Length: 142
Image: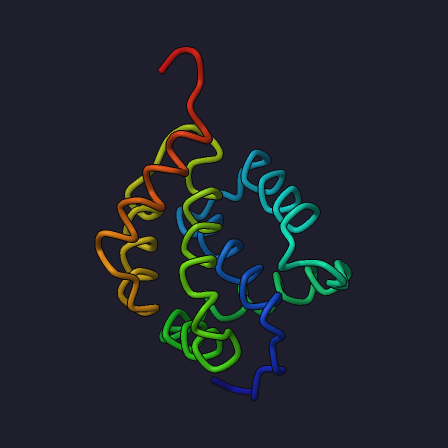
């Protein structure tokens, strides 16, 4: 990495994981952005979060994703700055973003797998989180 990234707050880390999930298939969909904004607006963990930081965090994520080992650097920042008790929360938010448009594409699934691995999410817990995201984003058409 050419420069030392700024320190991220725990909330920044959650936003970064959601943005990375949205960008994983190289198409940031409106439904995913709406989901990220809804989560930031309504989840208790974002109480008192300065939403102006979302733009800065987005730029950090996009810059990192352009680098060869950028995803590893992103996970390093997240593990360093996000309390472990919020690892499952980060995974749940990533699942919600991935499910937001009603379809999961290969790159989205691969990044979810990488998040599970990097944040050491228990398989059973991950399955429950995934099932909850699927249930929340179900449509009348299936």
